[in-house]
Amino acid sequence: MSSATTTVSAAVSETATAKVEIRSVHKNFGPLHVLRGIDLDVRAGEVTVVLGPSGSGKSTLLRTINHLEKVDSGTVSVDGTLVGYRRSGNRLYELRERDILKQRTRIGFVFQNFHLFPHLTVLENIVEAPVSALKRPRKEAEAAARKLLDRVGLADKAEAYPKQLSGGQQQRVAIARALALEPGLLLFDEPTSALDPELVGEVLDVIKDLAASGTTMIVVTHEIGFAREVADTVVFMDEGRIVEQGPPAEVLDSPRHERTRAFLSKVL
Amino acid sequence: MALTSDPPSAVPLTKDPEAAAPSPTPTTSSAPADLVVVPVRHPWRWVAVAATAVLLAQFAHGLITNPGWEWDVFAAFFTTETILRAVWVTLQLTFYGTALGFAIGIVLAFMRLSANPFLRSVAFAYIWAFRSIPLIVQLLFWFNLAYLYKELSIGIPFGPSFLSFDTMGLVGEMSAAVLGLALHQAAYAAEIVRGGVLAVDEGQSQAAASLGIPRLRQLRRIVLPQAMRSILPNAANEIISLFKGTSIVSVMAIGELFYQVQVVYGRNGRVVPLLMVATAWYVLLTTALSVVQHYVERHYAKGSAR
Ligand SMILES: Nc1ncnc2c1ncn2[C@@H]1O[C@H](COP(=O)(O)OP(=O)(O)OP(=O)(O)O)[C@@H](O)[C@H]1O
Ligand SMILES: [Mg+2]
Image (cartoon, rainbow over all chains, first blue to last red):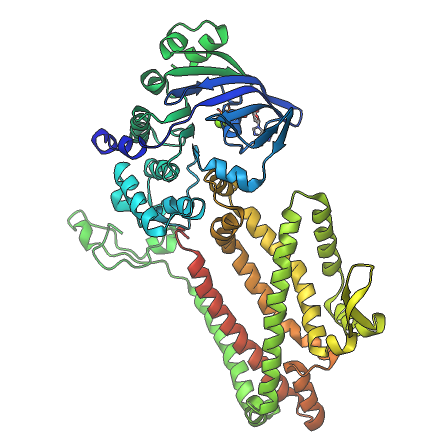
């Protein structure tokens, strides 16, 4: 597996990689205060792993970064550009949907449940966004897609439909689909949580390889081993706040906060 | 299945005592491959089949021998020009009614799915109104539109108008009928389309949005093709019922199939064979629609297990 995926880095390394700045972000769902003032910096080329108990707001935070979820206050910027808004003086003007969609092409998102398009073949799944959002010629996009498939070890599955693939294969296709836009930032929301245990490894290998390539990544996961191995920074969230963050050795091995310790003792 | 090397036959899953009784108890010497599987017998099923067959035969016999059906009259009128032209009118009413009805229906469906409460309420009210008013009442209203509005004009709302038309000239009988059918159909089509769109997993449009795929393209390429799976069977039902529903238009004296048949038997008094002419055409064309439905559904089933 690792030999098949070491080359993924080559596909992405040319792409400019982006830094992320999150400033006092708040988000409510009705009466529920889900994000309670999040501040987070992710340096370009670094891997940040977000840990935290269920319901702590990890997915919501990730989704605000590509504006799938609107924030109630605070700002998110990727590579120095505000996501979802335009600033003029003291005001933030919400961007038109068309401009938000354009911003999203620079941010790859991988979902827990893959969300591949079931009526399209693997190749069509990957080619769809480059063709319709970036206006790439279809031929060119298909050639690039085949290369990406080769690199996630699925060259022979181009014509298959998602239902004909295993969970691990589907998630690798979903990663290739996100990579097809050559994003500077990749967001993963529990990419292996829906997989059978024996399939987790093949997906993590692909992600590790991307990490080595220097793409900025934010990964929500419960795989502590993966965090230890790959993360530059580990962030622990609880009840809509970042409780602590730091290098994996610090946060995972000698956490300063009781809540982090309690959580880690449950997952480890 | 593993008990026999014979081609698989209907192996009963039920442990019916009837089956156990006649089957020979296997001796220790016979190999498993030699054992014979005896399916359960269903004697009462045969009785039911025989009774049904007799009834069907009687019915068929009646159709052939009862002179009341007047098959010669049926044959004489089935493909006469009057009838064929009436079939054509019926098909046109169905086609335009469906096309216009679903076009308006799609707009209404997306109005009801919209985030704007005003658009949502208007669509809701439309659907409520047009599902409440019987089609025949609606058609008569449209037919009498000219009585309400003597002329229709295009211009600035509540302001001066640039063009005006005489209502009766513009809304001819045929267009009044199409309009009535379409507006009625739109209310149902809207709900069918809305149901189909709602049936598509939300993750699909989120994935499309996260990839930056333009909004219209998301709809056309990602959401609607998947919605079609649940839209199609219901839409086919609607088209078929609209097709037969065109017979209601006979109240407006439009020469569609049912009206024309009535005209003919009004003249020659051969009611039954002429009703059979209409029936045969309705059955024939509904069958054709069902065949089309089968192939269209197969097209949209790509990539799915069922
Ligand atoms: N669209 C929504 N509407 C209302 N409440 C929501 C919505 N999305 C999330 N929530 C609530 O917000 C809280 C945080 O949800 P979130 O999905 O961000 O948690 P999470 O940390 O990702 O949890 P998990 O590990 O279970 O995925 C939860 O209590 C959830 O019920
Ligand atoms: Mg989550």
